[in-house]
Image (cartoon, rainbow, N blue to C red; front, side, top):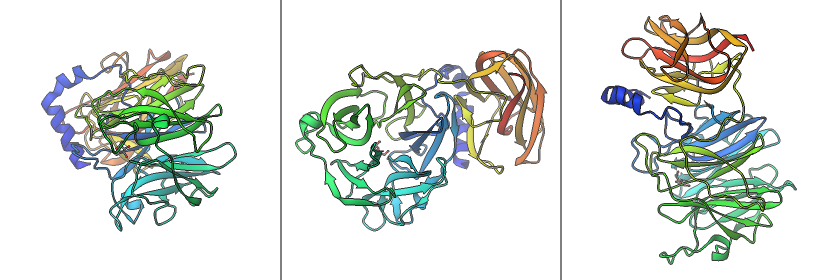
Length: 455
Ligand code: FUB
């Protein structure tokens, strides 16, 4: 984290105003701006989307990944940072490479299947973390790999009859039938025949005649089974196949997302949520981004009438809001549509807080339903300096000022107090900007905020 502090301080000093002006004010993609994220795996549970990702280290020159991260949203535009509830040390037998996984819920427990390289063999194997909550913490369910054949990228699906399947692989594609405990399987590992009819034709690589590369995402929709995967290498694009059953035969259906976005890998995750369909992927869109410093993004799409998937292109706008955000209940400061300059960390009061805030940094929260009008703003804050403020604005980070809360020196970055101030002009549904102002250095931390007034 200290490294991140120094990094952002250097960036702020080096590019200052230019960076502020260059920031894409209305973009919502990528989903997370304060760290690099990769390999999205969305899960819908109780009216929220939980998004499981990897974490590319800053300045990475390889897939140097040590932990997984969880994010969630009720509206597809504001995402809450739940930190890292699972990392390499969760699996005592794992050596490196916290790569692409997927989580699923069964009987109130959450199972997160991930590939890691093992200490014993130096080859990838699939482990499974388990938790009572979608946001963790996760523990190693087995104390050993679930399956090991030297391949990566698990995807998991529970069929309507209750039979669960785990698929994974690069360069092959295999599956097992999981038992209802989700941490054991019956029968052996079955390899899916990679035929050109099933997975398209690759030219120029006699060892890999089909387009299938890695990162399968298998699911069932309206009786049809889909396998959406990273195709060809490198650079990858996203393609898909369909099947009348979970084990094939698969038929190649074409491109979902063409090669785009300055990352030579891509990775798909697809869900239906609040009546719409969403396609998650990754690219190198953030500043400093590239093939090893990736960022997860999302697009809304509609299936064609025959169930085929249209071509989906990367955008910086992202999807429209699927819901409004209620400002009259406590909202976590780390629920963010776009964060400029901020970082997050574990808070002493639980969850995460926003921190490492400099003068001029801001947080955008989209589609906030102020209704009849807010009259007060309260924020849970901590600081070691006096004279900092949280400015409540609309229209942009430097837009109309609705109010300003002064933050005192609380005596520590985790010594929390609640400050309140009057606000005006906040009616209807609009985007909220919390802009931070003060002197030089770090100004304050924020754990949560809430408005008072007429709904
Ligand atoms: O993120 C590491 C690896 O890169 C993943 O396991 C692959 O799917 C590719 O995205």
